Length: 385
Image (cartoon, rainbow, N blue to C red; front, top):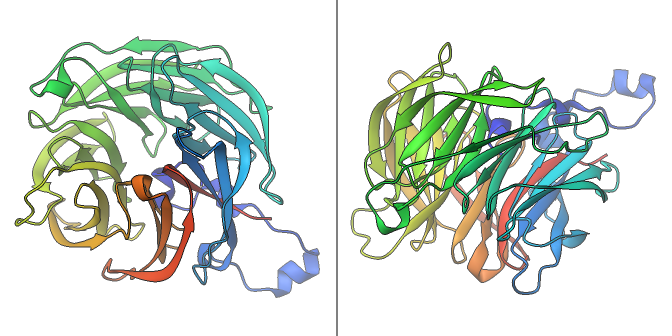
């Protein structure tokens, strides 16, 4: 999975890498689907307790089997991970006061990670990162610093010194919004734009990307209802809609998306919570199923995944159900290749839970399989072999 959210719109190049076997065997064998392949699953946890860095497990996308986690690379607070489109490199932010980003060579056969280099993020608490679809540029969101920073990616997977930097300015209405807090970065399908969700500004900033030069130019912004606290963002596979997750307000906002300009027009905002819920909650992750029929959002406090139906004709959305994640504080989740399973990472109960997913309805059912990972906060997939 080159990127945790773009993976859902289409099978990325890294998932098309051929496994071993003689040419005549490959010709006789039926084509493998994503659900028929084994995968490495990499987990980015906080290392405040017993985790020591990036962990990996082996996942069978046909059966939902998930092996116990083992340490892949030592690193402080690798809270978000992303994989290069060619599948050969993995990148991780170190969510620390100083902030940095590490690059690793990734061995698909063994799941081994070998460190290449480290660069500073010039802003505290970096919390998300993504490589563009050509693999030439990496962009990082600094939560604490309220900024966006870019790097050029070398042929060997290494990161250049920062090639561009944008300090956000402004504030919004709640106590957490006294200044900017960049929280996620997402490249558009055509690789022209980068959407940067800023929780502190109640805006999704739209940058035009010059990937060859590693440069960004702000060309617009989508404004969220005051107090939303936009955290994460997802495109619809049709490229006609986009969805912003409001961490503070526990909401999902749908937009119509103009691929020609990167512009977005608000359609509606709904809650991720049942009407009878009376407690504290913040949201964390949002992902659209590759079918485009529905999306999920994680609730920390209600400890659930909200299933939200998408009207593909209008972009309107409706919450249909909430599913307990069988743990506390679901910080992250990721739909598995093939769209038939989902892994949920519960940060405060130190477990990752496997759910079976009905691609027709979005219904989730626990498989009974879960593994221990201390403070898991990110999940990414990569083909094994």
